[in-house]
Image (tube, rainbow, N blue to C red):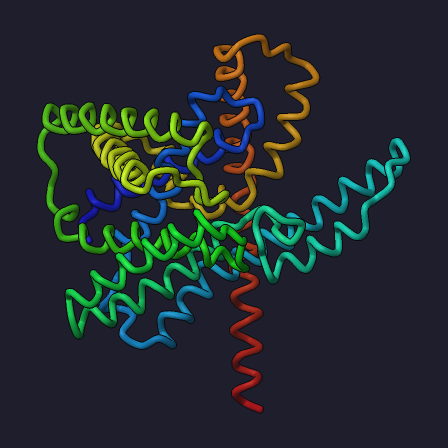
Length: 351
C-alpha cells in the first residue's frame, strides 16, 4: 500500500472524528449538525472498506482474531472505563449534593457493555465499534461469495442494504451490537472495497481535486437539504433515520467524495494523527466532552448559531487536545491487555 494513500486515508478519518466530536455537543448549530450527519458515519464505514485486505482473511478464524484484537478489546476497555467514569460521577453527586445514585440504571449500563443496545439504557457510549464488528462479519461473507460469483456478492450487498433500510424504516427495533445499522453499514464498506483499485492510484492535481470537491459538496448539500425537508430532522445511523434511501445514498457518497478531495488537498500532520488513532478518540471523547459542555453552558451565554459554533469549536479543540496528552496511557493499557490475554492463551494451551 502506497504511503500517499495511507496519508489521505488518515486525514479523511481525522476529519471524520472531528465531525463526530462536533456531533456530540448538545448545543451545536442545527444546520451544521444536519450537514455533518449527512455523511460522517458512512465515511468511517467506507474507509473501513477501502483499507480492508480480503486476501489476508481467507480463513474466518484469522479474520475473527484480528477483529477481536483491533476492535473488541478496545471496545471493552472504552465501555468499562465509561461505566466506571459515570458511576464515579454519580457517587460524586451523592456526596456533593445528596443526589441519589440510580443503581437500577447503573446495572442496566453494566449489562449494556455486553449487549450494547443503543438508544436504550442497555447501550453505553461506544455503539459504533460493535456495529462495525458485525458489519465486518457481513463483509467477510460478501467477499467469500464474491470469490465464487462476483454478481452473487453484489446481489448480497444490495440485499443487505434494502433489508436494512426496510427494517429500520418500518420496524426500527434496536438490536444488540448495532446489527440493524450494520446491514446498511456493510453496503458502504463493500463500495469501499470495490473502490480500492481506483483509490490506490495517484490523484490528479490540486485544480482537479478542487473542482471535484466543490461539485461533490454541492451535490451533498442539495440532497442533504432535500432529505432534511422530507424528514424534518437529521439522518443518522445511530437512530436509524434515513429518509429517502436514494437521497441518503447520494448525500452520503457525495460527502465522502468531498472529504476524499479535501484530504488530498489539505495535508495536516495533526489531523493525520487523529485519523491513525481514530478509534481511541472515538472511544473516550464523550467523557471529556460532556463535562466541558456542562461547564460551557453554565459560563457562556449562547445567543445565536455563530456563538454556538465558536464555542463548539473550542470544545472540540480542548477535548481532542486533552485526549492526545492521555493517549500514551491508553496505549500502555491496550498493550498490557493484549499481553494478559496472550499469557492466558499460552497457559490454556499448556494445560
